[in-house]
Image (cartoon, rainbow over all chains, first blue to last red; front, top):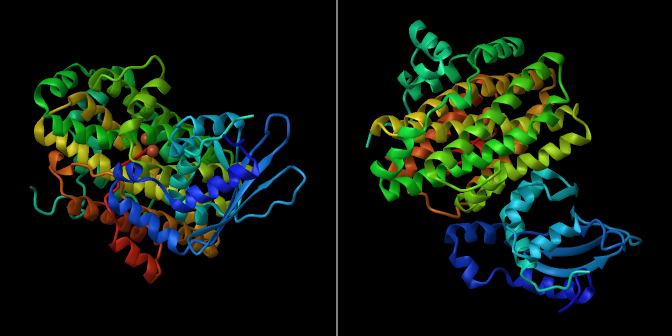
Length: 147
Length: 329
Ligand SMILES: [Fe+2]
Ligand SMILES: [Fe+2]
């Protein structure tokens, strides 16, 4: 199992979100919901930096996922000393990441503001909210070792 | 089916009806028709009451959520309602249960900005929303029979019934509240927040759910405790929506450029409204999807027109395509 916020994990995450949710996940929600997500994704070219505020004493780390016309084209890890640039920068505590990997509902994580938008336009960010939330759910299903 | 349901034309309210809506105590409120409360929300939109007037009204209309008796509701739930009716009712109410919590916790940051009158009024709305959260907590414990020691545990128990698309409007509100926290006097941020909270969540979603569930209770003669408490909640909502519409109107009057903030927020709200992840059996409660759609469109356009918020063509098209969405606060 790869470690959370390592470059191997970032690549696994990129491949998984690019692939999208598995059939059994899709089957649980109406096709029109997935169609809405497909429509958003098809023209999506923003980037997300998904952070942990403190990686067990190693400071803040971010997973940066870059979308290009609906394809998750790049993934990288940014440490505390690296410059960070993304359309939307979000961050959570390590405990939230632990819960996400344990199966906690990502919509609930957003609702309870356990994942916060630190940079980026809120109103524009939400135009892709279900695409974002379902991608976070996919990330939660990529096995990773917590520090 | 009731032809034209949800599109009842706005009639002039008689003085007696206004008095009944305004002055009924909790134990008289079962005599009030939900349509009259909804008319009451809209009757003042053209000349909106001031914040202190709304505060005084709150002091007169405040009700005690512990005065409600859910004993008959619990019998109706298990003995008279069908499984389909219970499922549809829970699916719709859970978006409200969680919605009340969300609007309660996101409101204090809005109270930090604005005039003193606005802040005084806001203290009353925060208390209202907390009371509404307790109303649903009691309903889920005593009628639906969900387990839980704490308020959070009952919320956790009803969460499986909340639609995946709840995070759209309510997550948006949570993040807008966070944005406002950085500067509670940022008027553009307040207007964006107010569009989501007062215009969409309260003015459209909440009033639509109230109309659907309360007319079901009334038509079938079920759930008297829920009917009384939720009708009183709807009367509170009248104050909330009137405050919100006054706030938006004054903001745009003070700076017409703020209109674009309302438009941008509505573009997001209407773009995410198109996603539906679960089918709700509205028919079990006597409604069709098309009737709910028309109800929501009417709730939105009536407010926009009365408050004088004009819309560009792209938003008019988006409104015409509104889909049923059932949550509230
Ligand atoms: Fe409200
Ligand atoms: Fe409420």
